[in-house]
Figure 1 (cartoon, helix red, strand yellow):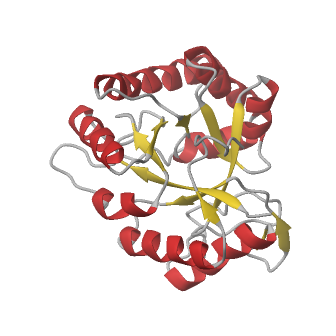
Figure 2 (cartoon, helix red, strand yellow; figure 1 turned 45 degrees about the vertical axis):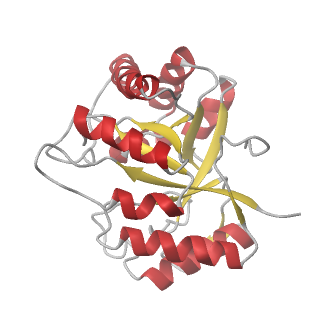
Amino acid sequence: MTRILDLNCDLGESFGAWRLGDDAGVLPHVCSANIACGFHAGDPQTMRATVALALAHGVALGAQPGWPDLVGFGRRALAATPAETYAIVLYQIGALAAFAHAAGARLAHVKPHGALYNQAARDRALADAVAQAILDFDPALILFGLAGSALVEAGRALGLTVAREAFADRRYQADGSLTPRGQPGALIDDIDAAVAQALRIATRGEAIAIDGTPIAIAADTLCVHGDRPDAAEFARRLRRALDAAGVQVSAASAPGHRP
C-alpha cells in the first residue's frame, strides 16, 4: 500500500515592516499552510497576502493560533486558563477564516503554534479547550497535533478528524515529546539529517530520540518550519526525497486522504 503523507509549513509570520521566511519559495513544495493569525506573528495584511499566495499554489489553508506574545514569537509558555485558551484560539480561527472567506475559500485545518502547541500536548485541560474551540467554529476542521499527545486524544474525544504530526527538523525525547528549543541539539539544522529523520518517520514509523532510543511515531503530516533561513531549500529537498521514496504527498484535507 502506498504511504500517503501531508506536508505542512508554518507561514505568514512576517509583521509590519519585519520580514520572516520565504513563503513564496516554500509553498510550491508543501500541501498545507499553517498561517499565523496575528497573536504570535503575522498581521492583517500578511494574513490576507498569505491566504492569496497559498490559494495560488493550491495549498490547503489552516489557522495557526498562538499565545498573544509577539515579542516571544509565541514560544514562551503562558499560564492561561482553559476558558482563556478557548477564547484565544476561537478568536484567531475566526480572524483567518474571514480572509479565507473573502478569497472565496474555506479553512481546512487548525494547528496551534509554539508554546501553546507544546503545552496542549501535555495538558489535557488546555488540549480540551483548543479542541472545543475548533469544534465550535467548524467540526469539519482537521486538528493537527503532536503524534501521541494529549492534543490528539482531546480532538478524537470530541469527534474531530485529527492529523498526527511529526517533525523533520526537531529532535525528540525518549517519551515522544519534542526536545525543548533551549536545550542543545533540539533543532536539526543540517538539511540532510532532517530529511533522513523525515524519511525514517515516513517509511518506518520511527525516529531516534536525542538519547539514541528508537521511538515509534505514527504520523499523518510532517512539518517544515518556515522560519528556517533555508526553509525553501529544505522543503524542496524534503519533497523530492519523499517522492523518491514512493511516499504520496497530499493535503490531509484532500479527498481520499482524511487521516
